[in-house]
Length: 274
Image 1 (tube, helix red, strand yellow):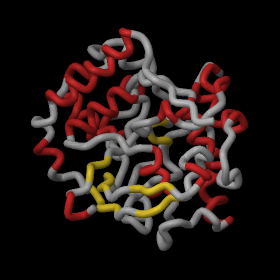
Image 2 (cartoon, rainbow, N blue to C red; image 1 turned 180 degrees about the vertical axis):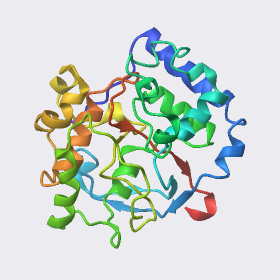
Image 3 (cartoon, rainbow, N blue to C red; image 1 turned 120 degrees about the horizontal axis):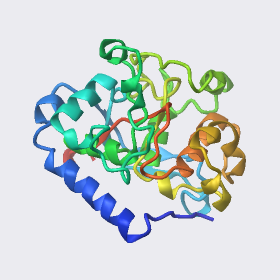
Image 4 (cartoon, rainbow, N blue to C red; image 1 turned 90 degrees about the vertical axis):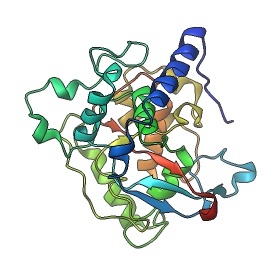
């Protein structure tokens, strides 16, 4: 059964609308930085999603053409966004948009230079959406993220390769509080880097994934990295690493943030590319 979690209540609905309006107001400001950011064209195709309710009879899902940021957003890039949009600074963002963990890495002993090439984490869905809007972009849907994440360096879909799955799964054995690697790994077959092995990533429809009702109320979202996947009824259970991402995302609220959760943005394809 596909369960769609809506943002309920007048306050949360108002928060979502305000977040979108704040982001849209800053869209013109980011034009200068957007030119320097690489977006890679991703062609349309079919995806056999891990979501068992993805389509009638579990048929492949059609994914339209789009363009994806070649790397996750970094701390340096997000700090530049904060300078242009002070309403998203930790001291200014309303609690309904962010959790107490929001951007806590900037309060630590590491210098801004040491953090600059690490992916930004401890960022809420609302803040991530606002950042993407500032690049005239948006967060990817789950299917778009899963479609690109299925690729290795040579193949657009390497998920049936046990060696590929083992390599990805090895990252999940690292302690959650360990320092993040700098971005810049080898590009996959689409030309996109660091889809695995560095951070988790927000998706636009995180609250509409296939999960059991109970998995949304299990407390600390960090714990779902290790135990949440058991609550999901999905196909392709051998792809455990990706299923763990579904479990984590499904347990979150829009203002949540964790030490391992960041994001990247996508743009709709030009009509001639579709």
